[in-house]
Length: 122
Image (tube, rainbow, N blue to C red):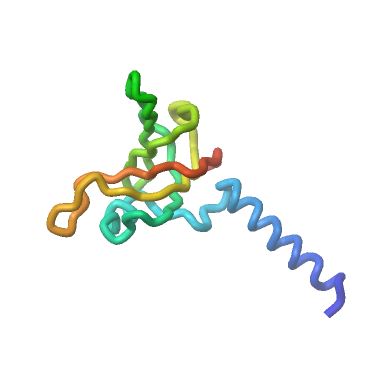
């Protein structure tokens, strides 16, 4: 196969990878409702979700910062060491999922410890 025939395919794959990485294509993200439903089995694993920031807070004197993101399936708290995002910001968030408590196989509260965050469009 000649380079001229492969070139459009390669450019298409690069574009898809770029847009997915920027959060413009939802590849690799899970609905928040699915993460919440499967929280016990996802404990300590890396997850990637997409949503809008609906709340944020910082605990005084401790420096713990957290914000809540929401999609059409649910909402989820995210802890971060970075500056808090603006309310209403659309984000793709990656991080490690942690259960606050699991009782009878059901999660009583979960959070993502953020490892990366990208602005998204949706």
